[in-house]
View 1: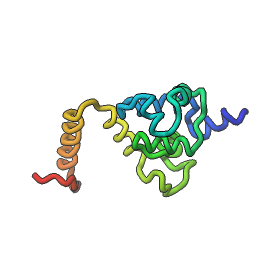
View 2 (view 1 turned 90 degrees about the vertical axis):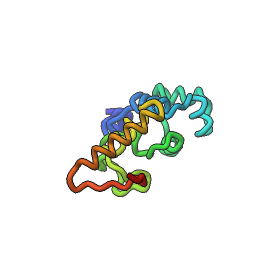
View 3 (view 1 turned 120 degrees about the horizontal axis):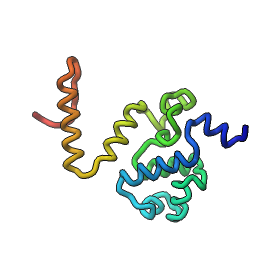
View 4 (view 1 turned 120 degrees about the vertical axis):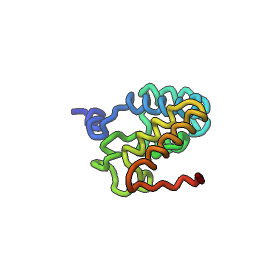
Length: 141
């Protein structure tokens, strides 16, 4: 088995899947390839290569991309890392759970401030209906 295939099996994601996820998160953040490129110090052509899977990202570059998108770097490393099976325990890069990352991903895919505000209000209302759950949103009322 070649090393690239072994890496895919270990992380659960190949370069194309990682690139597609970067593209999806970039778009959900409302950034163009040019804007992301400017934030991480590469050309937009290089971002295209990352997103298509033609060029592999180093871990340091992946951290830059994640930071530019407001995500933990671990988000791009695959489900095994998020579950902690392969990744470092208590990583300073990521302290959330896979469910939290999924929630953030879904939230970022929402378009428009009104929709995001309504979603958060709905979630707050839902949590308030659960027995024993308390939330502190900073909102009064």
